[in-house]
Image (cartoon, rainbow, N blue to C red; front, side):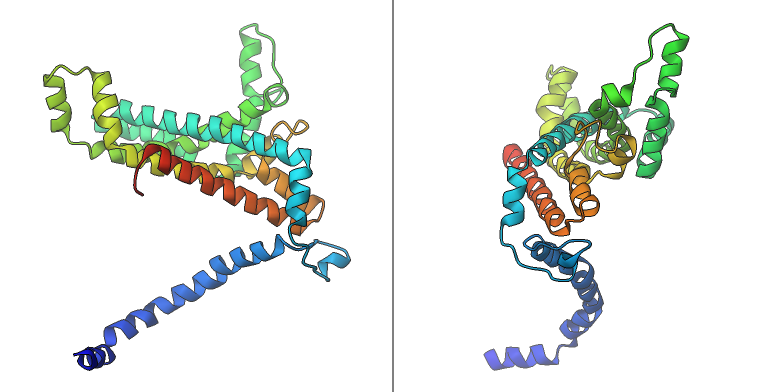
Amino acid sequence: MGSSSIGKRKKDPTALRSVLFLLPSWILLLIFFIGPILLTFYFSFTNLALTGTQAQNIEFVGFQNFVSMFEDPTFRISVMKTIVFLFLSAIVGQQILGFLLAILMKEKNPTFRRLIGIIVIAGWVTPEIVVAFCWVAFLNDNGTLNMILDAIGLESITWLYTFPMISVCIANIWHGTAFSMMVFQASLDDVPKTIEEAATIDGASRFQVLIRIILPMVKGSIVTNMILVTLQTLGVFTLIFTMTGGGPGTSTQTLPIFMYNQAFVNYQLGYGTAISLVLLVIGIIASLFYIRSMRVKI
């Protein structure tokens, strides 16, 4: 029976054909995805530099980059700034605002939903660099917001200097909320209306229906969205760099900004790739925390 099975497997061309069809995608993944990841791991343990003798003579330095990183007070500040930016703009801002928009548009007139959807999605489809310029034009010293304040007799505020972190968080919320809204809209549309009606007939208020029925049923989408917006927000660079350049001082110097400064301003590519690994670890830890705390299976 064993030899018969082997014989059938040899004659079956389906598996070989599948491998041939998948081979180009595997090669592309190996070259453009797995290869750079492995190189990043390797370079993070070297003294690779952008210029000078170290650019040509790479040496393995073990954990020296990581030791230097954790002894650097600027790195610790950047980690804190990253967590604050992530919490305010992604978890509190995009997640909650996206859910509120989705729940408010639930079962509303299709034309109204379409109109609000287009307005919100306009921010999402706009390139990050354009979003940054729009918010700089709105918040700078001679920007639109200060012109409005002047018109109603209030004193102008240097938003990007006095409230830099809040400014970049608001810009990121405006840019990314549409994604969360669409995820929650799709999830809320899948909640059976009959269950909500049965709960209402039994005397449950709209708030109780939301807390005890809707939220548990869309818990998986909430976790999935939190993971996606967290990973996306951890990589935000253009928006912050264009609006504040990471300043003033280190006020908005998140890890991507710190990594850029080390790799391309100070020319320490090995050190910069080590910082990118820490960023990757933060993303993994946050994702596992969401999954474990919400007790869902992704």
